[in-house]
Length: 210
Image 1 (cartoon, one colour):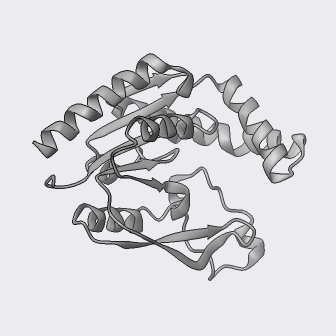
Image 2 (cartoon, one colour; image 1 turned 45 degrees about the horizontal axis):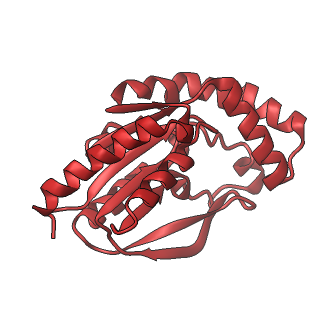
């Protein structure tokens, strides 16, 4: 058994293809136990706020996330202890009473738009990945997702992108790219970069298990 699980951070803007890259990693390491830790699960609890105030939440700002809890949970997982992962209720815009009992695994993938923005999280990662996709592709993907999966109108998606998502991307997400060990242009479509990434992960696993 290795000294501790391997932690991989996967960041990038909305619609960049982070999830596709993460799935590609999981498919490559089918014989290795992998745990997904989505930063989206760690939005702050807002139960103390009136519902009208919760609606004003900027989910693309670093302060929207409870990174203290995420770090605490990662530390437990690295110590091979189970955690109770929070669940976020997007309809109520606050944390659910439900939690997910989560066991430690050999490889932990921490995925989210701002996982490289926090130095404390970066210091816990063995590999830091940034998925870099052109803004026009990202907005198209977000449009399609929010219209099909969340029943939103084109106008509301575009308004939110212009007023919140784009400014937050430029201020917080894009600058964090400089901390990445590996930058993957065009996300899951870049098979060469994903092959290089999985080769690097393999080398770390071999060292940990040797």
